[in-house]
Image (tube, rainbow, N blue to C red; front, side, top):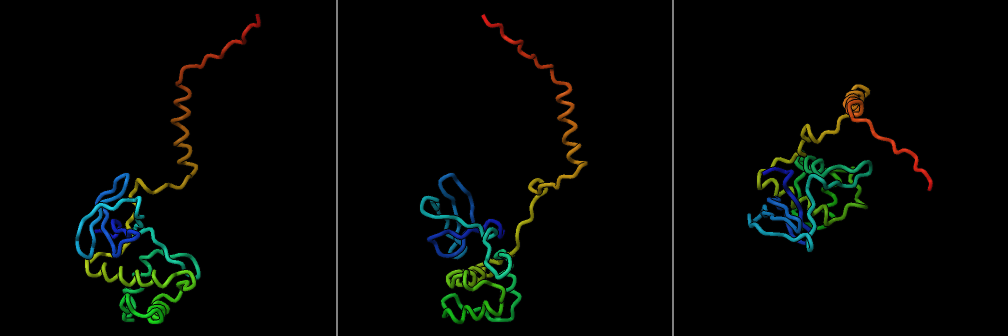
Length: 170
């Protein structure tokens, strides 16, 4: 199972693997109980874990950065049902740059719970790399000239357009 296929679904607890998506929803498998079900996007919204960012006092960071800091920390993670002061103190030690005014306690609890689920399922926490087709090349003079050359040749070899003669007034 890949981290890039994992989603959080509003209104449903836990994390899910997105097996298939349809126009009106998706088929997901729970990482906790392995049950598979269809989830309608009329009632629920899907959030890919790769796309979730966390507010910090500087630039926002991807959720992967928080998970890595939590894994690297020697601090023992509190249980998700722990008291709010204990959870906030944990994140102040693990990731002090987090913006605690904009990151809700419920989000911090989710991060603790989600990391626990990921560990139990032995999922490697890393962002997927873009394939070569998805990477947009930077425009250079050489490339723009190479792109322009075939267009110029196509225009040169195209049949001449007929220009309408002016109409005579009757």
